[in-house]
Image 1 (cartoon, each protein chain N blue to C red):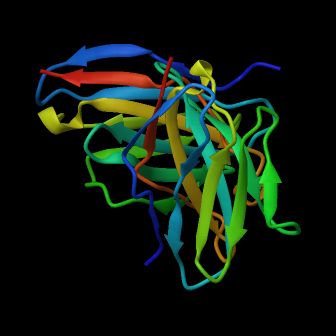
Image 2: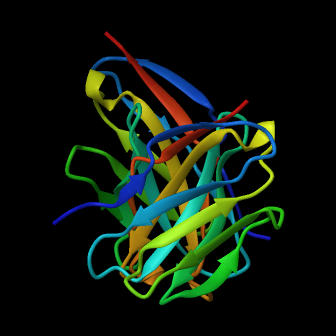
Image 3: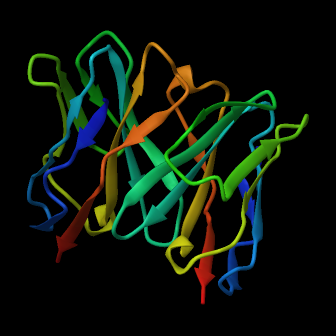
Length: 113
Length: 114
């Protein structure tokens, strides 16, 4: 059974640009959530999607957005990049959050110059 | 507001010594509790979870955690650590009322010294 796949694994952008990150969940998983991981802030919840609907959103500015497709694949977009957006972005999938187990991808490491 | 606290940001311990990583949470509703582990340059993996039943839960690699409702704690323990246990450990909660957000603690970096 294939795990959670995130692309790209590494990317470098400059301030003001925008970026799109992709996440393919484990087959059959309908819940996809995104997290930002930085050394200073730890793991910060961005948003969670279930069956193409955003069920919850963390405390991030509107520059951070996401969506989920009918095949459960998800994308997140960050517009007008800032230096502080440099981080590891982790995607996790689950059958349903209530089951308690998140399966994480290896992350997309974004560097903003 | 719900929150998770891990008081120790870094824990160095000698190989084969015991270790305890502390986790406390704050929530006005019942929660599910988890420990995740992150090895260098990898994503997180579930280590163990408490949903209901016995308050002592165990993982396949020798870790255990005990849910203490009165102290709102879920400390992680291992009687004898190995070099391969060196990693970042995250405590997390899901609120039973919403199930739509996992709240993670800041993490504890466990370094096992040979």
